[in-house]
Image 1 (cartoon, rainbow, N blue to C red):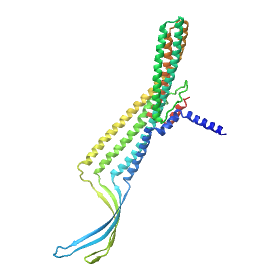
Image 2 (image 1 turned 45 degrees about the vertical axis):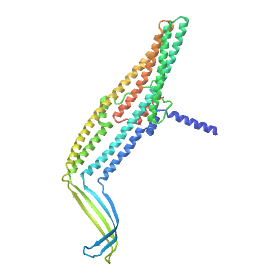
Image 3 (image 1 turned 180 degrees about the vertical axis):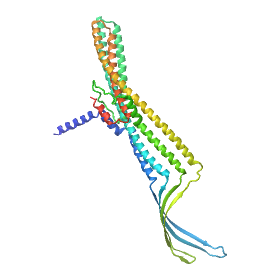
Image 4 (image 1 turned 135 degrees about the horizontal axis):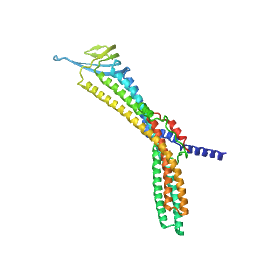
Length: 443
């Protein structure tokens, strides 16, 4: 029974480990471990507090002050021979004061800015989330491509080694020259160097993914052989550009920044406006009894209640208010230019990503056809070499072309998928569901 239970646990752990090597699992682990995304999450939490801080500017403020003193007062007449008298007594008191803004336009603008800043923090977090999706996918694809490069380099090295042995045998029996052996040896040495470089690049790409996801993956699920990639929907570049110009997260940030700048202009101009506050206070004070010049003075207690309005009219502040007004106007112009730049850059990014997807799909089709042709050419050259109508270098070149085409096909597929994610990011529609769709294409 214990042995069976141990086997079940081991099987469950092994299944969990295998399942952890797909794109979705890597992304979810990156959500929990990526330092850049953690910083964005904390920044969002801090940004949300701007709304509460802005609201505080239009709510009442209440304060309490209190005191307790020990008093020692001396009395001395200037007359000759006059005695000096002193009076010792305690005093204490407290005051509660309330102030409620009735008209402070700058405070109301500050409240609106707080709301906009909180919304801006939410959009910035959305940017960080989409950026994480793209970064995880790119690191995942880079590692897949590095694995493919290692596999291809090893296979190419094996194929060249077989051709090298064949050339050596043919030279020994006198059916080929030493040139074939030297050519095969040179290709074998080059393949060995390429394999070492590919293995080193694989280690680098593995660490790059680890920096994002927080752990190292021994292996990853790759794209299924012969998988067909879908074209972006809608298949109209102008619609994607329009969506990017209107709804890209960078554009949304620019729009919020412009609104905040508008409110800042009104806030600074309010420095010329009068302010009106409701003020109310309640005070209590007490004084202990004392004896001075032989006369006893009894203690006393007093209290007061005050309710009223307080009007303040600014007259002159050395030009500071007007200067801040001009500064706010200039910053609003900057925010307007930033918004226009965000629209242009988002449109450009959408065009580049769409063209990248369209070009990638065309390249995938071309490389698939080229791979079939390259394999046929390789078989033909091998057969020609066996019957003596082809030389060794022809076979080596054909082998190199096959492996090079396979690697370029893999790179085209992965690059197309990465561009598809970037395209959706420009339109602010990128989500975890898009990663799930790619995940379904994995082995």
